[in-house]
Length: 432
Ligand SMILES: [Fe+2]
Image (tube, rainbow, N blue to C red; front, top):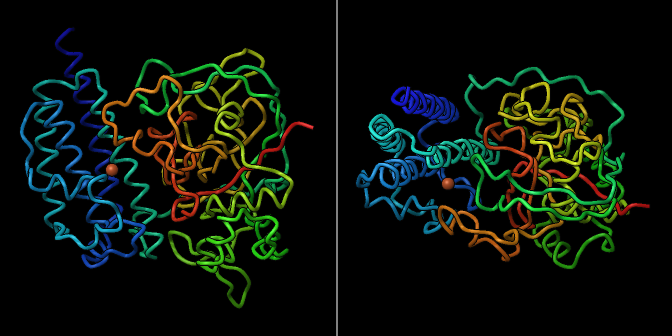
């Protein structure tokens, strides 16, 4: 029994890694070498950088740190270290070409599997770190693919979208009663350092949007002078908007038949019932002010997503303990875009909010900081070096986030000007 358990854990880990790899490779399978190797934008890495970076990370954490082996190609370590080599310069480097990056991925994977075979997965933390890292890069690569308007593989056809239930604009709200709640990842099981320690806090009563704000509602904002009314914008937000001539969310265009939207799989009419996506924090903030609302704090967001007032406990997911599934949340890249607001009533949070996980990342009012008692683990560059530097927190994951890597305590962060991410907005209001 003692011998079969580690072997079972090692083969489960290998199967998870294989599934992640299959997806990574499918994302680029039908793109040309030129598209995979080009730097399409200073905001996004060349896709080929992501590929080799995934390999370098796996080699560092599974083969070297977990297995005690040397690095396969130590001379590549700095170029594929996310912190040492920021996005803006990745396109200027002598990166591995596509074939070399794919070979590097395969060679490192072989070494990693040997380590798993020989030593087992240990307590599983480093395997999970490496696995989630690859899953998260799948989302980053989808952002790059969409941003550069490369069409993804025909093998990645979206699952049928659920019908719009109607009645959701993003301006309807539900009440979250005031009182104590628990925030952060549970003590046991994998979580990133920035989700811990789990702690009690008091959140006064407030209202939160039942769903994220929809395209139709954003269109009214746009057409009602939302991008021209100075009084709705912060000073910083206004200068950003003026400097970059921002007049609508990313990917919108006006065609002969009305507004269109660039989606991952091409141009489509703007779907009024879907959550707005590709808005910056500055736009989200201005939109909220224009509606006599504000963005929720992180604690408010997590309380709304998980706190069960009846039992006085936090749920693992908005709907309960059961893992995510397509009925409950639009995660996992199956839809290749957001689903209509309110389309997953089975995923309802205790307060009645819908779509808290999946569809679009939701900007919060909060700066990215460590919780009291934060301990960097396993390395400072994962979270700590970003604390207190003007990054705002996003919550809830998007349609492109993998289920395994997205929980109600997951914290994402980006600068308030950024909107290449799949970012949307859910409003909050002080209690009456
Ligand atoms: Fe990374």
